[in-house]
Each structure stands twice: as C-alpha cells, then as structure tokens.
Image (cartoon, rainbow, N blue to C red):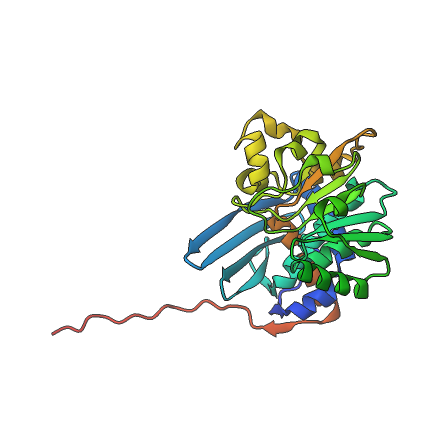
Length: 338
C-alpha cells in the first residue's frame, strides 16, 4: 500500500474473509517477500512469549516490517476445551491500529504455505510423489501446499490409527485428482518417495534415516514444541542441508535440533534459514542426501499473510469497520473528608 495510507477506522476480518482474501498459493508469495526482508535485515520477528497454567496456555508472536510500515502481534489462548487467536496489525509510522484479523485460518494458511514454499525451493524439480505422515487437522493443507508447486501423481498416507488413516485417505481422494494410497506402515509410505512431510504430535522420535532415499526433501513440520520429536538423530547425521524458517525459534523449541547441535554454539552454523537461501539465490548441492526443512513457525509468517489480507480487504471494501480507539481521562473517587 502507498506511503499515503489513509487514516480511517480499524477493520475486523473474520476467518471466512481471511480465507477468501488469501489462498495458499498467494501466501507463498507473501512469505517469500517476508523471509527475504528478514534475511536482508529489513524485517524482524520478536521471540515468542508463553504463559501456562493447568489445562491451558497463552501465546504471543510479534513481528515488524518497517519498510512496509507494518507491525503486528498474533495472540492466542489454548485450553483443553478450545482456543481462539487474533492478529493485531499496526502502522509503524503513527501507531494506528489498522486491523484485527481472526487468526486460526491465518495460522493454518501460513503453516501450510511455508511447507509449500520449502517444497518449491528445496525439492527436486521432477518430484511427483509425496508421503504424508500424520492425518490431523493440518494434514490436508500440507498436501495442498506441496501440490501447488509440484505436479503430484501419487500421495502415500500413513498414521498409526487405521480408521483415522482410512478416513483421511477418503477425504484426500475427494479433494485431489492424483492417486492417494493408504499405506499400512511407515516404511511402505516413505520408501523411494522424493518428498516426505511429517505432521504429527509425536513425543518420541520415530523416523529412522534408513527408511529415506538419497535426494529426499524431508519437511519435519510436526514437532514444534520442546517436548516433541519426530526424527531420530541419524536423520540429521545424513542431512546435507538443514533449513528452518526461524533460527531463533529452532534454537529455543526444536528438541531434535537442540539435542543434536546443543543449545547454542558452532554446530548451529550448519543450519540455514530459508530466507537466507532465497535472498542469496543459492544453489542446492547437486549430489545431496537428505535435505531437511524444519518449520517452527514465526511471527513474520503471520505478518506477511496478514499484510496481504489487509491490503486486499482495503482494495475490495471487505471487513467490519470499527471506530478507532479514542483515549479518555480515567475516573477516580476521592476519600470523603469527615
């Protein structure tokens, strides 16, 4: 949006409006811009804030792109009985609150889109088969994101619960035109497949490097909390390239990478951000073994998608307009004189 962004009411965008304004393909373009800006020092993410209590937690992710004149926070509360997320978008020049976006769909868009962007950049050009390990709420859009950048002819699906796996396979067959196979084992699912996506809540690592073929792109998207892990250490040992969306979040929260490289130190020099690769236009190794992409989630991804949704909403006149906050004098009561 132009330097002369007009002052006006703040806008509230619903989940449905966000989904209508930005699809996965467009989100990949937004993320590419945001990651390059961060790699070149023109955008920045703020470390995640986390508070916990029995049965719930509160989270905040901040990010800024001063060159585009935007900053924002995604905040959410997760409980055993449900969760709600919102994204607050601000103008960095005058502090104006521009928009509030309902952010559950936004989060799923950026979580899937970052995997699609990684597949576009890191997967072999001719990769046309994918293995999906995990069939939860994020699984279908993980497939959609890869299918948006690679002409898939076959998807193999595995999760340990047969009935849930079968239900997902049926759903995927209804959504996609390529072959979808219900794989009876992890080995059967990943054998000789060029793109493998993990999207599980595993608390113990289960993927052995011996199951993976040379040249594979492994998108290890599921274990983003310090207590969780999907990959055994030999996966990292075989990896000729390890990429993340956020180095800081990986150092703080990736159990797999922290246990392999230590909490900090020289070992982490082997880990690169996707943004750095995009910024430098770097070429991948021609003779590579496992390429691992570990998306941890970053506030900059949320901001990138929120900016696109907001600017399109303004251009199309979409959203509920709300009066800007107006500061007023606080009230008080004095002690009566007796």
